[in-house]
Length: 110
Length: 138
Image (cartoon, rainbow over all chains, first blue to last red; front, side):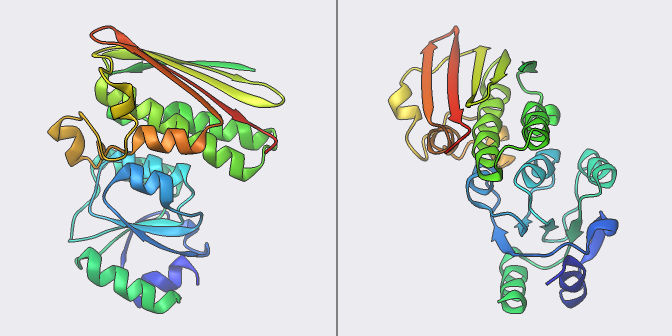
């Protein structure tokens, strides 16, 4: 499934990287611990988190996540968003909690 | 090929810079994705350790035909008990660093899992030296 389809089905806001939402999603990984994500996320997965600082982007891009979903209505910090726009990396946002959005993502990509 | 970087303690906005540049270079020279992944995980964690714990540090990386050799040296508090620091879940990170989602005690274990050779030496109140090697043909 493409990121764009996930965006549509989960009603996510696309804050950056709209030019790259045609990429394939291989799964999801939900965590707020950066080293956990660093060690365990797999290529092409969507990372679901409530963290909003620039290091999220560094980890997501280093580990080739397909996108990041920021939950709980949180907004990315200005420097995170600026870099995401510059790099064309999809940062998505939702008012829902990590549990709900993870469940919905799981249901549509299995 | 040799690459050198300087790191400032506490400068989280630039954490991961060396890792992302090295990743780019390894991709360009056609190194296997799985090897790049291991290198990047180890290097990023080691970089973040300096940012999170030390005053300042330096990175020296040699990319050779058969392996990548990385030495990270810092000036800072050092590690009193390296065996303890290698244990999953053990961390001395500040509350601010933990709030950012770092300091889960997974950095050194991630480094160990993703390198072929690892040597950590440290002197309390002086600094820490982390030497890592990843073979490119595994």
